[in-house]
Length: 266
Image 1 (cartoon, helix red, strand yellow):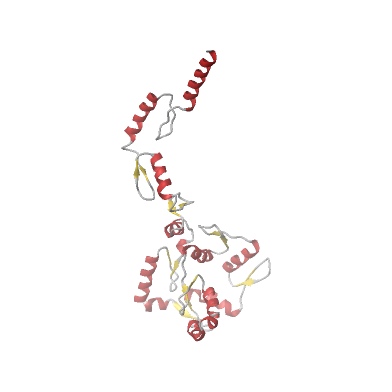
Image 2: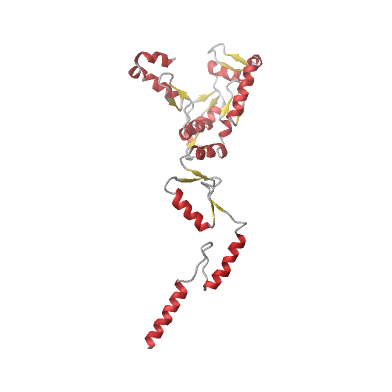
């Protein structure tokens, strides 16, 4: 009899400790069902203020547990979620919107992406760049007044840059590298060169965090992430990230396209 009483006491204790009622909304544990029932009214009063909305399909769930179950059952098998490392915004990892968000919102070099080849003005958005180019088409004589042609190489450059440009032809290179003794025409080119010795790469890719010595190389590198191919072959229409890749492709032209290689080389 004593053993039976002890068994019942242990069973009751185990039921109290391990099988206590739990709130399905906030997962809080209670001693009795009555306490749980009274607690559930707090969630009912908050229901009109609290929403559990799926960030993927905007489904409004009744509770956090239902929302998590919905995401697990509906979306986990079809998409891979991506979380922005900068602002925690959620995207579909492989979608272009995720890459574009990082490139436009968190890339310190994005503002250098659209540079006018006529007046060197820097613009942030492509739409602004297109409108700006149209102003040059309407006012071509005005911008021509600010440019000149180098008499030695025939390059069309801004008048303000003609003096440093002429140093290339005159052989004037006053800025010397203290590491290897190589000379350069200006301080800016020298700074970029010194980084080849110091291995300094201050410009980082916002997607893969790869380092680069110069900011424009980040812009070129980003094309591998965004899929942009601005240089295309006029024969096969294949796109390339850089002009050098296009020229390398053209060099193989005679083996691939035969007589059409001459057209492609143009």
